[in-house]
Amino acid sequence: MMGTEPDFQLLAEQAVAARPPPRHRVRDEAAERRYLLAITTRRLRANFAAFDLGRPVTVEVGVDILGHDADLGGIPLELGPSPALLIRDPTDRTQQFELRLRNADGLGVIPVADAEAAAALLRSGGLAPYRDRAGYGTLTLTLAFAGVLPRVAEVEAWPLSAEILSATVEGPSGETLHAFDRVGTVAAAASARAATPALRTTAIGGLRIGMPVDQAEEIATRELPERFDGAFYDMLPELVHRFGVRPDCSAGVVADIRAFDIPLAAEDSYGACLAFGAGGPDGALAGRVTEITRLTFQPGATEAEARADLQERFGPPLEELRSGQLVWVGRDPAAGEAEGLLELRADYVRVAQGGPRREEGMLLATTLRRHAPAADDGS
Image (cartoon, rainbow, N blue to C red; front, side, top):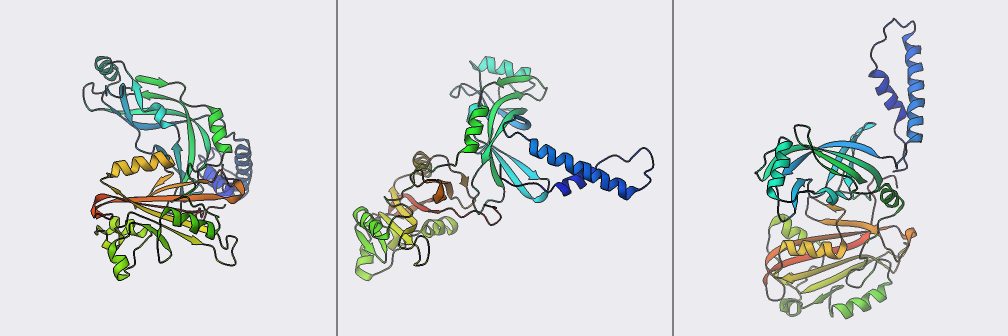
């Protein structure tokens, strides 16, 4: 999927070292080892070349089985907010892959008609029938590989995508509780492998990456009429105009509040702002927009509402960083494949006093720029 090859020599050495000792004494141990390494390397190369990415593979994982939930219509399975399997690279002990289950929502709940039927099913599998958490079981997944996802610089593991084809849930006694027969298809996995992910939205405040600077200034002025120190604002605080105090229009405003639990500065209590950077005179994007940042204050909004709004606008994020940032990576459908990928980041924090009225609400920052692959990306 990544267009790379494993270290066949290392894998062959590991395989030969794991062989049981020979029954009879070998006359020339060095020559025997060279022979075994050669035939093992050839076998590994042949297996690698013959591997069919469309071939279903089976994986067994542990799963928490919860109690019956009438609202969900069955017995929920606790798969986590972003279901994924962590896999180590056998040729590089420091490298990890994260196999992300792209359609895991298709097996979130074992459908059961009512609480009594659920209790009987759980009891048959050796699970607690009437608790919030019934117990621990086994989830057997049949998967098809669905491609390599873009890798964000802060994330160590390579993100790979997998399509769940079918799944079976067993209780601790080995009793089958339910079979999800048709969750996904091999065709859907193949289609995902062939496609480059696209961003749902590739404009911030009406501005796009690669747009001429003069056009961006015209749109920004129309959107946010107050200009100060190269950025565009709406409802700037009076102290900015009166004393010339510089407001900050950068994602760092939100990051600092989140990291250090500090109040929002009075000069940053505007309604919204928009700023952009331009390419240098010698670059391919000379005189064109290279990065866009927008901050908005949402009076009275909650963290859950801010997150829901972001997912509605941009779709599920590719990553949720430890810093709290949400990250999306994909191409601009209007720009074509040759333009590369864009990276959209969003960060939000609740403030006690924000906006022109210094009231409680959410401060949201979104930044759009070209995606820079991780240093060891290979692309």
